[in-house]
Image 1 (cartoon, protein in one colour):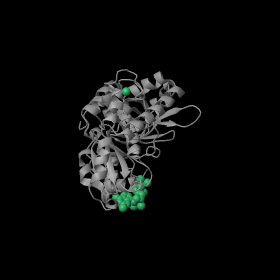
Image 2 (cartoon, rainbow, N blue to C red):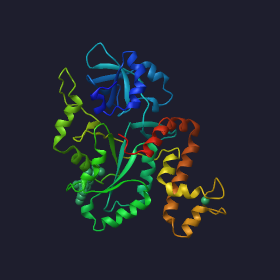
Image 3 (cartoon, protein in one colour):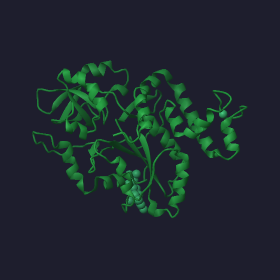
Image 4 (cartoon, rainbow, N blue to C red):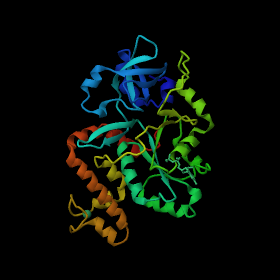
Length: 358
Ligand code: GDP
Ligand code: ZN
């Protein structure tokens, strides 16, 4: 399927391949733009559809992770009534943000799918915290989306260049942009990621300026962008409805769902290894495969701390996050979670190798 409308919504060649078998059955491809209740809003080339889950999808799902979330691509059987449909399948994701809901039993839920870029927003004011940045990077790498660090409120920070250098040291290979969302400074640096067909999300603690940034990105064209999603609606319904996947003026798509902004750590360890690429590389030189970088002989990581090439606080941060992930593993079946996360792990690797992929 080469529908231009699908491309605008972020449909990739891989998803088109995956969809081919469904197209042969007369199903329609669409992207979930909102949905928490029984019904999901799905944008399709023929307009927006209010869709229900097929009973088979609900009953065959082994976990909530298999159910469609905002940003997912789905195969839809159009209903008899215009604008209605039934979701028959969820197409393979290229990335996903998963939340583990707190409780006696850890339950995982997808909050956003098929995200290309995650803007990790940090404040250059009182919020500035390198350890928090490291933690956020683990989460971002684990999602399969490529992280970009946004240091906001530059107008409040006299030593922004120095802060930026500190951040670059804890975020190897991650682009860092210094911006001031409120006065609108430095935002041109975000252009490489605000491009047609690409999907972005904003993560960061409360108060760092995410809403301000979203409004900046939407600019004065908020109304116009809404029409992009609705333009193909031939029935001309123009009711204003809540959406969590929004088209930005630059052609990119923004996912902004409640809960996504304050994700807690959920990882199979790959995100940790990626966020701490420097530590992982050093660890390969440790004498023992399972070195805990504590008091083992021949520890290359400790040696790097001793000779000053690795910051002790960074190692401490790594060990702390690792311990946190291990306690998660004990609480649930690691094999099962590994399989779940592994679904988009392959895509994750290709994102890392080629972050500018179109
Ligand atoms: P959110 O909780 O992350 O969505 O943060 P908001 O967008 O609500 O911003 C929190 C506060 O920070 C508001 O008072 C904003 O006006 C302010 N703010 C956001 N960006 C900037 C900035 O670049 N500079 C300054 N000085 N204040 C900002
Ligand atoms: Zn070691």
